Image 1 (cartoon, rainbow, N blue to C red):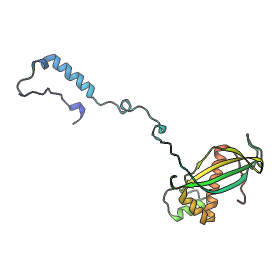
Image 2 (tube, rainbow, N blue to C red):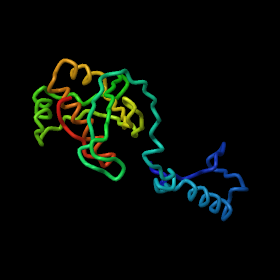
Image 3 (cartoon, one colour):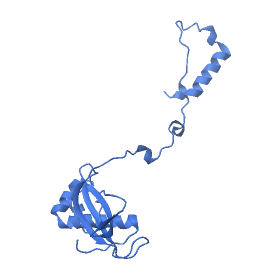
Length: 184
């Protein structure tokens, strides 16, 4: 039964006798008002507009140390000269989102940069911060991944290179930098 077919009838002890205060036009007016209040409303009027930010909860993760990637800018940018030192701390946490479960074949496709691969490792990258290394200014980023792929990167050199390339690409994309690839 929908709300449109719901009829409100006053409660009585006897079906044949209706309380006199609910008789006639007044009774119909009260029923009409109640039915209008009970009519279904569009969902937009029931729920205020929300964005994805209203449903996200900040999560604080204390990452575990991993390894440090050291590189330099490959060319001059708006903010930094060529050969400016960059350090990326690759850290991990078991509380960080895991990559999706896929076959080893799918992981190998990703390691070989196959465009049909759908394997992705969630990575969080901090904003850059300035620091010094041997008395010279440098930029430092922290990149956090789940502990499971990090552990694999400690045992599988190709997988480690995949993680490094992933971090470099994120730094480049988010900061409009071009970083030098080379021996890490």
